[in-house]
Image (cartoon, rainbow, N blue to C red; front, side):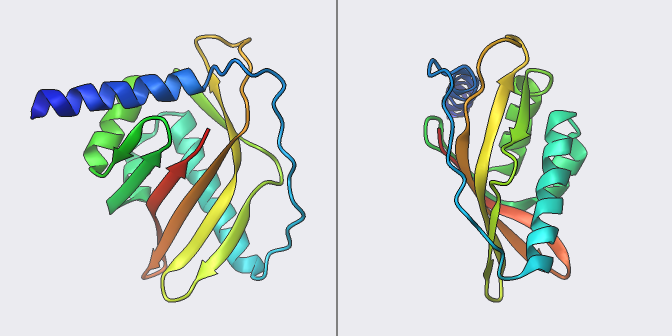
Length: 162
């Protein structure tokens, strides 16, 4: 059972790294017009996105761990599902730290409130493979659910699409 989990983790990370070096060059996205209904909520989630991905890009695992809910669900269209927080952090440490950098596509974030829960964030980002600095990094869509408990934001679900 433990070996199966390790194989699944390795496959997930391999697929993530492969998606960072897509063969489609020059791929772009059209950013829809968006005006937030709740500017304060929008600003809060944009700040949380920045905090998380600053930690991601600098391999600050402590901050990443703190921002993930204990009940995190991470869905990757090519890699599958991960639901154990420690496994996600371990995979990031072993396979992402120093190898992959995330860049937000400017102006792509949309934030919508979820009553009595928090917010859903959608947008586009690019992942740069630091091992191949000249490789193209194409935009991909992401969706994140943020829960606000006692004025603390936590990531509860991530959907990463390529």
